Length: 339
Ligand code: GLA
Image 1 (cartoon, rainbow, N blue to C red):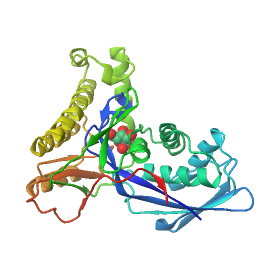
Image 2: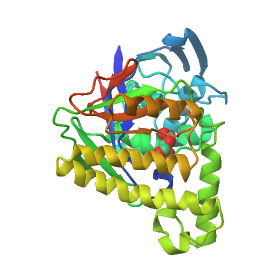
Image 3: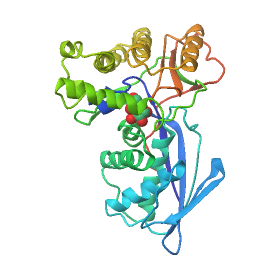
Image 4: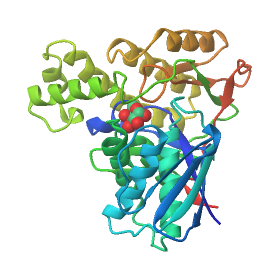
């Protein structure tokens, strides 16, 4: 029996920057999805989503299109096949402890764990992890229909245990960043509004960013000149302003952490949230209520995390603040690995 674990992720700061060639600062968490895989005679894939008590079966060589969790499994098999990995007949079962739609990237956790398990079943060497992250992102884009960027997949596959990683999506340079919290705590709280990338405002924001790039004559919004971006028509002006200011906050966060200034780190989370709410317009009332409750509980900063339009809120609590009910402490864990 082969077993592989893919972690979910927390993104400390740098939201909606990945598909704009910008900066982000995620880390893998110690919760995620575990895949078990066992070779079968014949050429079929049998898959079981234990938490949902649902199953699927399809020919490994030509998975038909579908939706829901099955699209992740079929898409991963198809994309591995497309890079020349011959996936044999296999029985797969998976379960996880990252809630679906919570903004902690259960989907990247599943893709990463599936890839590692299926590579092992196929007896294939592991490709470069950045390439694997790209493959997982093709599964999301081409099979699931969510136009997501590379943030979640890189975080799940390329993180470093105990640290955050600064990702420059313009160059795909990954750099470890120390995360010394000195007794402070990072927690996430579910807002209660589940997000759905393929249907939510996420794809609409991506289209707006493309429109802003076309108007400015740049390939990626992060390359835009701030003054030129300020002359864009609304809402493109505010979308670009979010991306440019959020990039600056990523490096400001690294500087604050390096200086041990956790109060400033909290202020940056608040500033990120305000920008996501006002300029990117990616908030919903449940998320606002969750942020407000965390601030009342003494958080130095709190912000929506992930694609927005629902999902989880991330907060930084000083040592004397009691984490409110429903909050889960999050800390950096190892990247996807075989068990
Ligand atoms: C989702 C997507 C990522 C990224 C974030 C926003 O999590 O999957 O690619 O765009 O939203 O930062």
